[in-house]
Length: 206
Figure 1 (cartoon, one colour):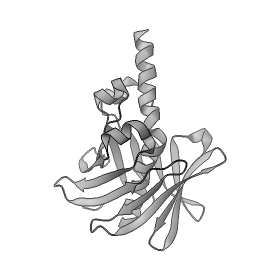
Figure 2 (tube, one colour):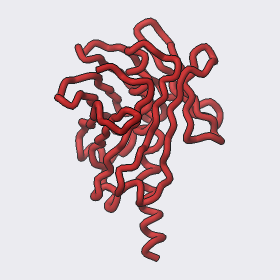
Figure 3 (tube, one colour):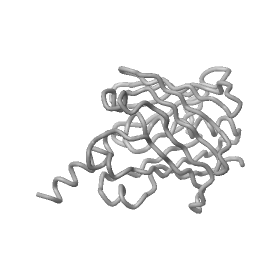
């Protein structure tokens, strides 16, 4: 199955992580615009290492079909400042890399395929939840984050990301943009979700 022009990524937040602060392994559903699940994703990482390294931990994220067929793997080693990701296709061959960068107060990722730099993913500081996919400075797609930091979104499986591939039609390029959406979540929003819930929970109980 090929990716549609827009997909929704829904993350499953486990209750134990939200309440205790312990890192658990991420799980996601990948749906089309109608909400029909087309793929799912799950993290592989060491539980004990995750408690010490948090969002900087080394991990592997597997994207598979509903039948369990491997579609893509995203590998991220431990990092200190700038995260780096290696993206593997279904045959285990490297199809691209995604490197995190900072530009003043803006956040962005460089997206490479086998031939070199193909896209940039940029978020302006004032639009922290919007990530534009750029090719030669022109917007060709977009990743939208819809996280409010409320308990409702943790417990109701709310939509976390909308990935709009825009004018990107090549399937491999779409997979790299999809991988970038996961990189944004794992490297930018992971602590914000948990900390936002804990602040909200404390406020509700005070």
